Length: 333
Image (cartoon, rainbow, N blue to C red; front, side):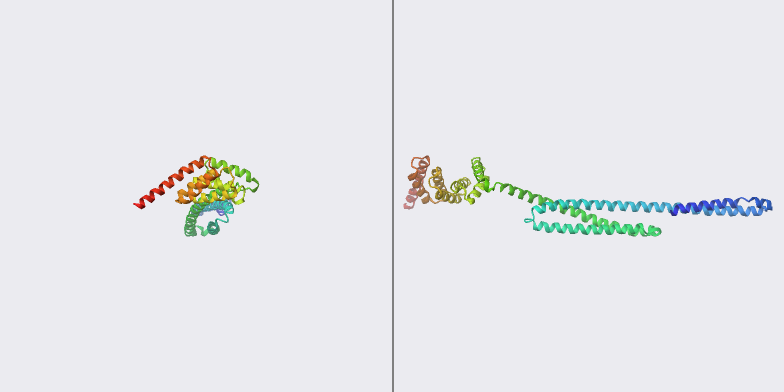
């Protein structure tokens, strides 16, 4: 508006200079001298020079204002870009919070870190608002804007640089936190999948599934189900027998003996008793307790004499006794 007003003013001045340069009809009729006309021309030339100088100053002022406006627009775009980054970070924080709600009991420390990051983001937003305020102040400076811009612009650039570095660091921290949360989420998900079968109304189905997993040699999955059934007291004799079998297959002989004992107490007439006794014998042998192994051999032979397990137990007894005799002879020498 100021520049447009200046242009109008210059136009008026030029018009007046032209009017003064030409003698009026009244002057011609009054017989103005050549000297008067010459003086008028000189005044017109001087006035034209002044107008030209004013026009040049006006052009320089327009160029200065254009440069200031461009600089202001550039800083506004930079601030808008940083605001966009802050919004993106806020979206990521919202997603992380959803996952934190699922893992609330197991992620206390991570939650505290997340709150710290949220506080830092909030501080960054306040700093950005401060930068925006400074830019608005620059826009209201007016005539002195050009002189203040160099000093104020340097401060704004330094502030934005610091905030950009903070945002980059926050993004790296959020990325690390996100990876840790993903791992915890997957671990929690796997644990939930492992316990998904625990339905009191579906114990028969779980029992059949556990047996199938055992025969498929998926001992860990089978063990989880039989352990739950054992704790629930469902078919305790057979559940403990399979737990003993799994422990035996995994060479956990002490556990195998324990579960075999529980199974035998629960049901001494089960059809799998010969296998139970034979594996109990082999477990004691593996544990180095030969006497208990022989005791169970005698029980197996006495209660199930016609089974293949009894025949194998007899062979084991012969080997154990043979080793015992050799040990006695060696000591006698």
